[in-house]
Image (cartoon, rainbow over all chains, first blue to last red; front, side, top):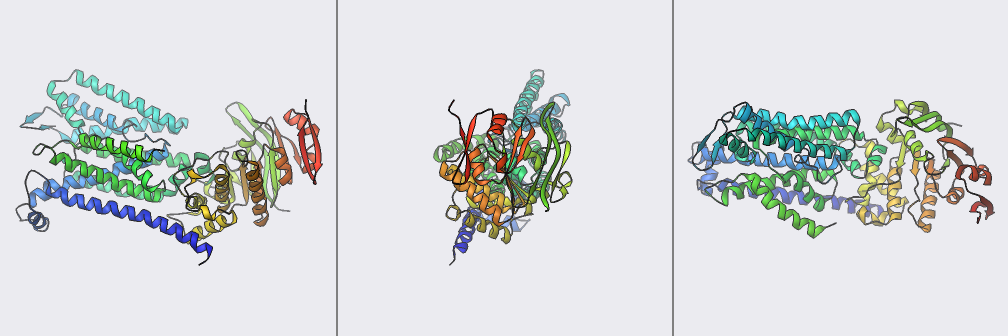
Length: 352
Length: 254
């Protein structure tokens, strides 16, 4: 065997290892899905689940198809979105802290939702039994949350476009924007009734259980072209990874890549947060964990961050449903509870 | 003789500060040009103007008789390989880092030709045994070879190197300069190199452009490097002695 073949075949087997890691993630996700269908208030046996999946007349079918499957799919799709958004934002802004949360998207959405509930009266609410505080007009709230999420980040991107500011300045602007939205939300809450305040607070507890089939479809239809766009530009992100000037020297229009990356990831993020509420940490940790395991090659980093994001969110939601059953916790609480220690562990273990 | 690069009356300014004024020069295939001058004389800015990282307003630059202002970023990247002063490391292998030089040719993903060319360059640069090392584990000299290999795998007509030897020890300085010289000869590439070490430049270059206050102060062959020129351009009194056929610049002791 010649020297030449050795280097190339070594490289190819190195790439193959990355695919194996991806395959392990897919298997883990599949196992979690099966387990997640089983967990819940109505105790279904494996037979009932299998029967319910194929036979719409079966006893468990309605629970499976109307409650558990949309919830699981929402967790998977939203988790994918979050993993990708974090991955792209951290890359294009050259900052390990970049995520929809640091760019003020979540806070903007919370403000929008609070505005709809308190000012537009979408949330004269009825508190039923144990946990359900129901927002009366979910469509108005979702729409206002989406607008709130997009406004802040659009202003930042517009300024960045006109004044060609640095990525660091964009991050700082995002932090400032978050503070402004948080203050705005507090201002609204100060003058609101108890029940309205309760409704806005409840809204911010991100919960994948809110998703109905139409929400799932919308998120899915957005995820596919976004993922395709990001994968197509994987080599541009790889170039950015080794420095702005080198990337430019390789013919990458870094300003355009940055702007489009931010725009698309902000948009998908605004949609998920509007439907599901604030779910922190997944977008931050999924890409960081994958970067440490698989490296910064975005051909592999983008899809594996997506799968890991889905896995984290689905595991968290399954735990949220099981841990204090029959009480179902909002998944946003669990992601941070599970995510932070896991993240600590990884930083300590692989500390660089 | 066909010029691979010609720079014609180029001016560049950041806001009101005029960085480059009336820059003119031409470079032939296979030339090894050193750009000399003190810090802040506009050397790096000139490099970035040549490959349009900075958008100069006045003047014209032609690469193989094409106006760079009319070329797309990707076309420029196919003609010129650029190595900036600093490049970030990361959690990627040497192979990936060099393969990235094929970026101007990649659509969805790399082709087998890209892989082959990368492998060839690694061999030429003696980097084969490092192929699967992570670049953040490399020494300064190894890393410099990696970034030069990346620029070469772009298959450029012109290599633009901004202080390629500034962080290297003596052995690596000589090795890197020798590699650049050999490769540019073998592939008939014009190399334009910003240098701080005048002696190293004299040893390997055949053409010199000396910048002062954003203007071309002098240009030409080794003969233009005189004690008077160094005094004018750098403000330092020196002797120039020839040793083993190579001129040596030695600062006077007080």
